Length: 136
Image (cartoon, rainbow, N blue to C red; front, side):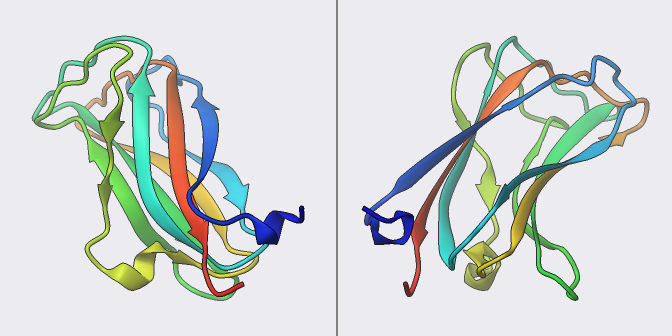
């Protein structure tokens, strides 16, 4: 069976290594889509508990990059107000704009860490992305 012949939800997982430093930010390429796809969900499973902080926090942003276009937010998870429980899956908030969830062929999906204040250490985590091929 060819990859593009797979139907239904396709689950892709990526380990996210902790930067080990609260103030560290970064942009990690995760996946390049060979065909048009639609993101169904994005889930993070942290290896340790995270205590949210309204001043010194971190945000993970799942971002779509299309050649020649501005980056688009697909999903986010902020630790400004909501804690994480160790080894417990938690959904990232998907974009409310349906078009932001559609990946064109050759689009790249990245995860970006930004910080507020002095930042917040996010432990090693597992990122689970569920998508479906769209129009292939």
